[in-house]
Amino acid sequence: MVIEYANSDLQNAEIVLIGFPYDRTSSFIPGSRLGPRYIRICTENIEWFSPYQNRSVASLKIADLDDYEFHTEDQIKEMEEKAYELYRQKKRVIFLGGEHTISPPIIKGIQRAIKQFSVIHFDAHADLRDDYHGERFSHAAAMRRAGDTIGLRNIYQFGIRSGTKEEFSLNKNLYRFSVYKNLKKIIKKIPEPVYITIDVDVVDPSQIPAVSTPEPNGITFKELIDSLLLLKNKKIIGADIVEYNPLATTPYASGSAVAVILRELILIMAG
Image 1 (cartoon, rainbow, N blue to C red):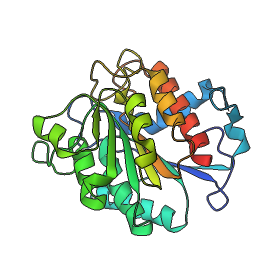
Image 2: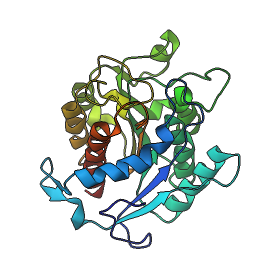
Image 3: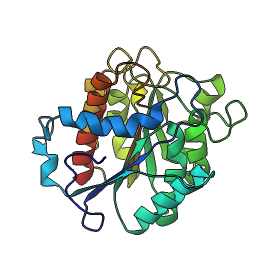
Image 4: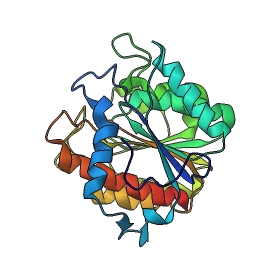
């Protein structure tokens, strides 16, 4: 299935959507591979018009390529190649996950087409382990692997409230707890263009409970939207939304919140 407001083919699209239904390393509640499908379902509950930005996604040319179908055992490489293929065509893409492990191959694929960019990372978890249970390509190591490609100095992390002592000391651009206040303080210092990765568990589980690894004491949904709006004047080349898990609890309230995040992200990226 494709999102109901998709109205364009790939060639003419301003914004491209694609799902990467991958959750091979989920360590707590598996099921985020179904996230892309349920995000699309929940867009049917969400208005196309954004009261936050006074604009409708109907004004844009949006292509939805549906969920990517994996063909080999090396799914990490397949995601990298698909990202590279899209960015070689100079497209701006929002990738729907799936677990956070999808981000490093996406970033690696983009880097093959666009050499230098920054990553803005919203998450409850630092994701800076070198490996997790012996697995280097894990959701818990996502930003560490992304750093292998673009350098940790180019990754700006917000909302982090869980990680090892080493993780909290590894990246000087890691900001704990608050997102909006810290992002507003340094936003002018973040080099463009930027790629945004949103792990929806950055929001408190009382507001978005359907996630794979819920972490208490998160930000509000409003703070996340306000933080995204801070990025309206940034050159954004792409984004992903990850770790929404419709199997973790009743999916539709959380899915509707994620569908709003997607709508706002589309409009922000379109400029």
